[in-house]
Length: 225
Image (cartoon, rainbow, N blue to C red; front, side, top):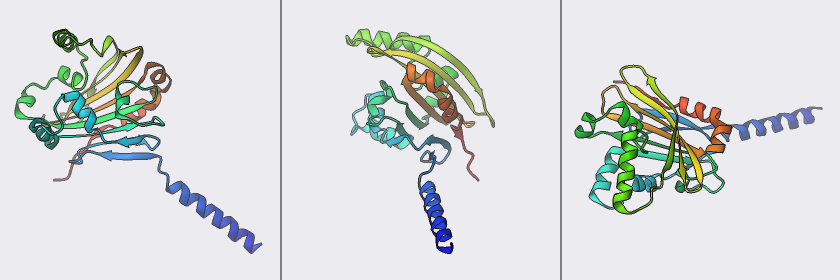
């Protein structure tokens, strides 16, 4: 009997240790420790440098890219079985991109709620028109087409911070991709923190509640001192 009890106790201990070794979430902070969120551990973390290169158009070794790297922190997470940063714009599985920007003096003067909406992709009518004009000027067909605004919310935040959360669709190729964009300007007006969750529209409609939970963890932290 004692041997049986000991065996059961050992099995329980092994189970508990195994469970403890597989946390439910990955907890994330930016480089300065001021922005926080958590992602289910089923997501794979990726190096987001390729996304930065795509969004800015800067050569990775250029002076502009090097200066930007000093002011910008970013990361990405993909739930695909074959993770890739390319899934930001086209994937049947959830993808998350987060970035924190230390603004220059010139950028601080131009920050508005609309600028927060357009921080990653063109959302406002003005920026969408500008994007189409640039596509025409370069002779390249626009990647983002048939914009549809699904939700636009101004966030009520503590300590003078401001923010927006916008959900919208874009047709990219033959698929419709849904983006959930949260952007927060800190109380000092010097830092913008952004979380972008993306998934094909069918995926997003089925899993919107999960994405709401992830977005709800995206917060600014007040450091001591």
